[in-house]
Length: 362
Image (cartoon, rainbow, N blue to C red; front, top):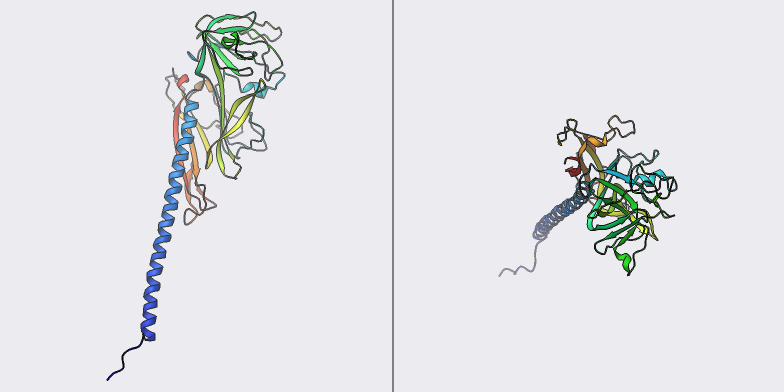
């Protein structure tokens, strides 16, 4: 009788090991491929969500540029001091120029738009600043006594000492800083615009034109019943690195501390690597942009646009994934009219939006 087989031969064992190795390699390859695809899809979804938030922030504020509660063609007085607190700070409250811009920021030249302390915009990116009045929680004027710099509202208001406000009756408007502290007595309906040593402070009580800072009373103007007081807003958008070294969209905003106004940086959206802006110019006064151009039209470092002709803003955001090694090789992409090859393996995508400056086309 033949002996029964007691095990596998060497050849059978090697064949089994080879088949097992092939199956294992296939499974690993499928896992790695699925993992890479998931990482890229996750990065793309995150980029799209961040871009949506960034465009929403920019669009919402830029659409309000120059808003004063009624016609943007009213006369406007600005009684804030400009000699004691530098022209730069004063310029951020200049409602006669609701949009200001800087094209391709250069570190050595600095920025013409004041930014919060510690802000270091990414070189070559654009900066845009927008100013408007915020109608939320506005005060409807019951009476205004110009001589005592006192405004009475019909209802209680939440404005505080040091906040910059804008009052308008659709014929004339004025920018001033609230000088009184609102408490629980009758002052909850009162707003004062006295002179003082606040920052920036009011140079005169007078809210009329011409602005005369040589006297305390200045040029008087009495706002009628029904005029509106609103909070003055200024937002400046720029690109800067956050605490983790990742580029992000920042916004500076007006803050008040101890009755004095200043500016504070807010990080809005991470992963915004570049911001390039072109401006829609209306040359025939029909409310439509005839062409779009950068703020510095000839590359000499000076913004050349006539602000009165700008009716729209087109923003181009270059988004990048937070994680590196998302794509298998360095990505080549087209941005701002040039072809660029990345220096890493992050995923990048360009997002564009055009915003009409509503208060410029009405």
